[in-house]
Amino acid sequence: EIVMTQSPATLSVSPGERATLSCRASQSVSSNLAWYQQKPGQAPRLLIYGASTRATGIPARFSGSGSGTEFTLTISSLQSEDFAVYYCQQYTYWPYTFGQGTKLEIK
Amino acid sequence: EGQLVESGGGLVQPGGSLRLSCAASGFTFSSYDWHWVRQVTGKGLEWVSAIGTAADTYYPDSVKGRFTISRENAKNSLYLQMNSLRGEDTAVYYCARAGYYGSGIVDYWGQGTLVTVSS
Image 1 (cartoon, chains in turn yellow, green):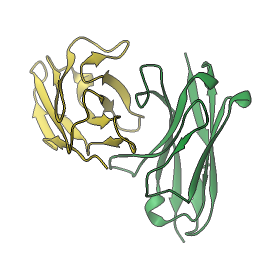
Image 2 (cartoon, chains in turn purple, yellow; image 1 turned 180 degrees about the vertical axis):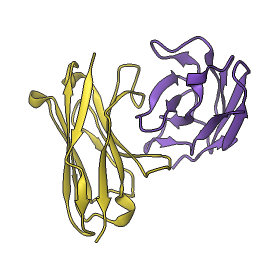
Image 3 (cartoon, rainbow over the protein chains, first blue to last red; image 1 turned 90 degrees about the vertical axis):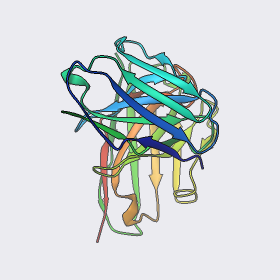
């Protein structure tokens, strides 16, 4: 099973600033990496797939990069609605696996 | 706009069984892969099962032999039969659609149904 490790566990950032979240895979998953956002009491929401392609309707301030084992989600200028938990997920190997999440909180 | 509505969650004793259902609307149900993903309250996400358009099924070791995923295209419905339930199966179970952007990429989620395994 592929282990996905996210860092940091919690990230404190001020509104308007940039946030950089990291995700590492225990072995190469090529570019088969997605990012999701989850707010309390809600289901996850797809942000990025293919490591760098935004899903329909996702604002341009969200960007993804990386391939192989190292991936990054960047939020260029944080808005109040962006404070949430973010998960990465690999879909190269079954079972598909998620990282443990990064909580993005207001500084 | 599509919608997924799960049902069937509840309280069950260890060793018991439960069947979850997911009713899909607004989609061409038969064209997509479907998944069940669970989340322990306050914790991360775990894939529980998947079923492809050809009814091929996939399970992680944690539920293999105990859970069975199935689909009924004529009813736009997805199911998860859960047997021999354990305390560690307690979680919110989400029905999820994949395949629009590619296999394994979930772009639609239900609201979730809570399964509690406890005596």
